[in-house]
Image (cartoon, rainbow, N blue to C red; front, side, top):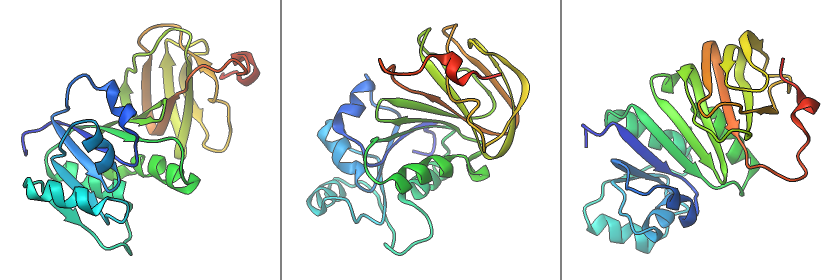
Amino acid sequence: MASALTALIVAAATPGQLGRYPQRPELVIAADGGLSAILAHGWTPDWVVGDLDSADPAQLAAVENLGVPIDRHPVDKDETDLELALGRAVALGVATVEVVVREDGRLDHQLANLFVLAHPRWAHLAITVRVGDHQVWVVRGHRQPQLPVGSHLALLAVGGPAEISARGLAYPLDRFVLSPFVGRGVANRVTEPVVDLQVDSGVVLAISSPRQEDSLPPKAHRTP
């Protein structure tokens, strides 16, 4: 597994979320309860990681009998299951990570999952997250998300101010310093199929959300 370059980490997800992947990724890691979604999709994980308080004991036993490595951690720990799974991916030599989580559940878990991904510890990873029907890119340096023209894209600085340039949006940015304490980057709109993002300092979460009929028009939250 040390040669795998791309990993899919499945946290508390639904089996339907994995239907977006026509082919099994090179490396599939179950973060605790994500094991259930992976098995329901017809895959066997390459690793199972976490305190395993949400994993089905029978499913754990089944994959362990198949020879799947299991990283067991205490329930009382200082890292989330997602952090532990990311650590395992790094140890396996991964450079690109996709994370799948469901959009319901505890708000503190949802926020922690996104904040964790912005930590400098993972700065060398290209990380994309699917939260239900939302897609998130962790942007340091240069990234080019591909999105349908007309779709929404929010740009949110995390951990401190971020200097960002953005092209392919209704409201482009040129070395704009985005503060994490304001909502000026919330509602932009994609105008080209490839959005060009360059973050020269800080970290930005680029968040694509499904279109909603009652959404406010982009001018209501204009990004300078």
